[in-house]
Image 1: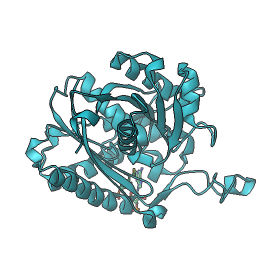
Image 2: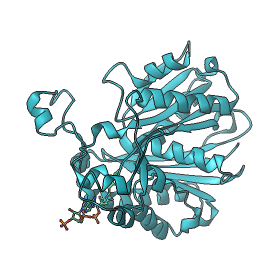
Image 3: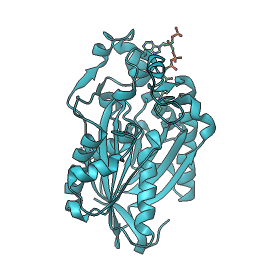
Length: 333
Ligand SMILES: CC(C)(COP(=O)(O)OP(=O)(O)OC[C@H]1O[C@@H](n2cnc3c(N)ncnc32)[C@H](O)[C@@H]1OP(=O)(O)O)[C@@H](O)C(=O)NCCC(=O)NCCS
């Protein structure tokens, strides 16, 4: 828990999703699947697919402009830009630097992190700590942006039906009067790195004709194992963060879960004894947008009037790594 002088709030929030919609019916013309299979196993009905010129940087920049505007700030009020993505525009420079330039932010520290679908929750703790520590920074722009469609094997029905593209951003700022971000419970287990990964493209397997032919530059997943691990680690981190803060599940007004799979979310709901009505869901429209999933959902929950000032919000996520996390937030907008 923070002291009142080192509180950090979400001052602005914004998101962007590409215009192009790919429905389950359209997908079933591309691979051997059906709307019925995808809907019953995942809850996903459609996803957004980035166009040719759209990238993690372009989508992240639009989400960021919206978040800065929502915060009532100017670009030059931002002194820290951190992006979470597994689909950066290129290995270097960072997508954060590319977004900085697109927005015309003149003076900021910029870098990327990689924690897959838990990325935005990692960003919230990192941003909060940097703002609190030493008061060098005042307003951090935290962005989850993904063009997952660029790393999917569009012939692999076990993965391509699950994901989509998009971006979400938040401006987090020091506040003397209010406490917004209350607590964080992050975790990781590299022993499980082989359940969800992309083998090629890094220094251990740079692109070659063979690596491309062998499909090494596509996302690989062992779905059933991921499912079981996801339920376990999300429940665990949520229970721990509630206990640490002496909160019972009925004190949480809204849960914003990583939007990967409706059945995973239903399991979490029953294990935590928080009814599904208190979970915010938009996965039917977007599928799993990895690091962008939670900030897009948070923005849509806010824009739709679902979040009220003073509400206690629990965010939970899991992703490749494995990584996972839970974050407690009091809504201050
Ligand atoms: C991927 C997932 C939906 C698969 O559901 P499942 O109930 O575990 O299904 P299985 O993998 O056991 O496959 C069941 C059958 O459906 C088939 N199948 C897989 N994908 C299919 C698809 N898109 N359409 C139709 N059939 C499909 C399988 O080939 C298998 O057929 P078989 O029994 O003849 O071998 C589920 O495991 C899941 O959501 N896991 C978590 C994934 C996730 O969230 N990843 C992101 C982490 S951030």
